[in-house]
Image (cartoon, rainbow, N blue to C red; front, side, top):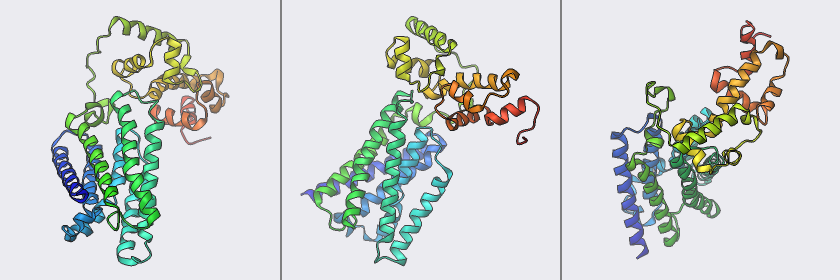
Length: 353
């Protein structure tokens, strides 16, 4: 009985993935998300087929291809999540992880199948991707101002950790795939969790969340003459209080969070989030703060009276806890480092001492 339910759930999940794949390819999803989403869906179909003992005999000719496609599923989930969170993934990881997974699969299938080396490498890499997804999603949630994405940061890593993390851990301990001797109840739970992840992705895709999937990756692409949203009386008052706090230099507070700023202004955090995101157009609280911090940093670095002030001191005075975050924020805003910017202000070409 459990085996029949398991097959039904897997076939339903495969059908849902194929439907979402068609909608994805024909929709207006932004370019950076299409490949990760397509890889996620195709890899999920492959995993649904090759991780079921009940389907193994029915789909045996497809098993090598399904097995190969399935090993990239977690990589594409990880890449999709980072693109949703507007975090640029490291180039080395983007290129190196697929090569490592493909190489491990080839070694495990063709070179040393009896040693299970490829099996363990694929599983360890998968667990590392799950851990990194969990870290990025939850640690960045406080800074995120987009409400839909904040919910996405919470539920996606939990679903992925419950499904992929649990199964990978069990398979590592037992040393065999879930289709090879896995308990029927565990296989059914696995299939249900995969279906949940698929439906979760489908919810965003079918609703065409503009804040997550369609919004342009280039903020400059927004129309310059777009009308400013009308503010309610309470929003006008809150904006005035916010602008007064920023004019007084409250943005220099070290470790300032959206919760801390809301407490300082005497307003609920969700109201401040909505104002900064929906009315002022900032998607991350750190980007909002950097607007003020980097503007003052540029003025300080160009000030001849403070020409000998160390860059680290500038960073600390503006609320940064260390130099690297300041350097990254400054370069993102100006295209150059603080030291190079200071040299340019005094007519010295960048790169000279």
